[in-house]
Image (cartoon, rainbow, N blue to C red; front, side, top):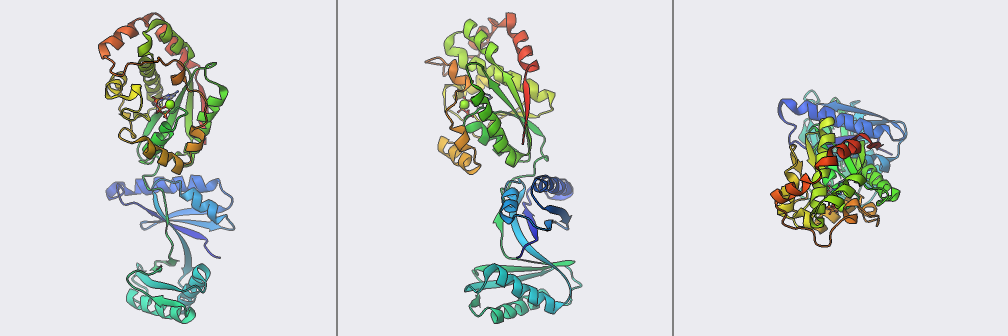
Amino acid sequence: MKYKAFLIKYAEIGVKGKNRYLFEDALVKQINHRLKRLDGKFFVTKESGRIYAEAEGNFDYDEVIDTLQHVFGIVGICPVVQIEDTGYEDLKAAVVRYIGDVYGDKSFTFKVVARRANKQYPVVSDQINRDMGEVILEAYPNSRVDVHSPDVLLRVEVRHRINIFSETIPGPGGMPIGTAGRAMLLLSGGIDSPVAGYMIAKRGVTIEATYFHAPPYTSERAKQKVIDLAKLMAKYTGPIKLNIVNFTDIQLYIYDQCPHDELTIIMRRYMMRIAERLAKEDECLALVTGESIGQVASQTMHSLAVTNEVCELPVMRPLIAFDKQDIVDISLKIDTYETSVLPYEDCCTIFVAKHPVTKPVLKRIQNSERKLEEKIDDLLETAVSTREIVRCS
Ligand code: ATP
Ligand code: MG
């Protein structure tokens, strides 16, 4: 068969009131973008609180479902059979055909729930329920009505056309991308930051990313790994502009001038400064990191406070209270885990001290940074102006 259309259910949160159309339009746009990349032509339409994706011609069912399961804002995908209203007998026939196509001759319990949105339709909902129940029982002797917990909940919605559907495939939830402004993700090759980016994007935020690499201390493979992660994330977030900043000279300069137990924290402060500058250039409203309290020395409460001190923009840390295993579970779900655990070096791990400070004191760190005054502005300027931009989709 069978399906040529999908009814898309979206959450009600945040879509009430006079901004509702903005959310719906953003969702329609996102669905259109994603389906456009597949074989087959789709029409995505919005119609009295419903979004439909209708296919013209052939398409790969599994591919469409998989694509829609990556579009934030969708809570459910209902493959639907849509028929024109050509008479009540035709509706009965269509319902029997639908059950046959989807459930065959299996034994199942069912319940019909009709909804007459078109009040001109001559048969009331209760009567539709009874009549459709009757024809199903007649056509499928192995079926039985169960109004409390049926195997099959068959919905018949009478609108200007009639929708027949019974399956709801879960969507990813969240808000459509493009409804909540833009944020700059500090994306490393680790497990955490892709998950952090995914979580913020899930709230409708457009994601841009910055990666700091340190050639020749970090390899091309490490850089490619980050590009690959951004591409994996893009399946959910849509295209990501990835800024790749060469951080080597800044790191070496810090290494030369500052106490080694403060390297990580000072380095992190410079990463935040650069990311914030790029963020502001592109009108991002916040930074996003994959930090989580206590995971490493640079993520103690003290270290986070000192790192945060250089930022004017809000820094979003969606994983702040997550245990590592919970983060791993999400990375497995969104398919970034396998790539994240590839064993390529990270610039943070190359210049770390054996015993980094876990309780940095802001005044002391600021003092150490004064030793960088001579060259740091030029180095920052160069790092920003020589950055490479890769569009990941
Ligand atoms: P992740 O798994 O995300 O790499 P992590 O547990 O390794 O995190 P850190 O290395 O301390 O932790 O990094 C904390 C956060 O700082 C990361 O989640 C990321 O947002 C950012 N970050 C770290 N290294 C880089 C980098 N090389 N480029 C861009 N951002 C980075
Ligand atoms: Mg890391």
